Image (cartoon, rainbow, N blue to C red):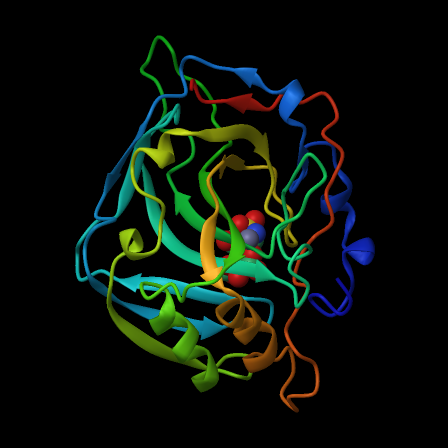
Length: 259
Ligand code: SG4
Ligand code: ZN
């Protein structure tokens, strides 16, 4: 992860040296099945929208232009409804190094993070008032290279050449998240643990969901991220390996939805 956010992850501040950090390696024979981890309800995931696509200097961030449409998730063992804010990706030129999470030590080509937010401290009622610090729910999808072009994802790939440098942005449309996510049956199978943002500030406020079933993109679709995007104004540093190394699981348990 050289040059990732100017200073490498080993030089990130003390907020990033705590005990509940992300990503982690998920060791499948240690996960615990949790009956409360039922299916998610997705709302607005099927809506064809325009999206703003921005090179923000460490990833490509894709935010919905919602015009009042709410895109939310609930269920899935989450304590509240969470609202979509953006999605972004992490990647490498190497097909087994671009994911942040790993499964039994195995990294994937990329990882997509669909980020959702809720308000802190809104949980429970008067009897059960609970201070709740986890205001972010990230749905993580591992990406593996396949032989077919993923047509649903292609508009995003084509937009990359318009935003080579930091702070550049463009729009794409009419696209829904379901155009490139696994089908709903497959979305029932996921891992769950509590952790952090994977970039500074590294806030320990994230309910992580890592889906078992990877998304398949063509190898060229994956490589486009490394070759079209740059970290710097001079277009000298390809944006690639924007991946934080795995962190200690510590005392945490990783749960799995019921099969
Ligand atoms: C990437 O740098 C995104 O571009 C950031 O999104 C994101 O920050 C950051 O990763 C950390 O998110 O799911 N990997 S992560 O833990 O979502 C936030 C923006 O800066 C706060 C919009
Ligand atoms: Zn991320």
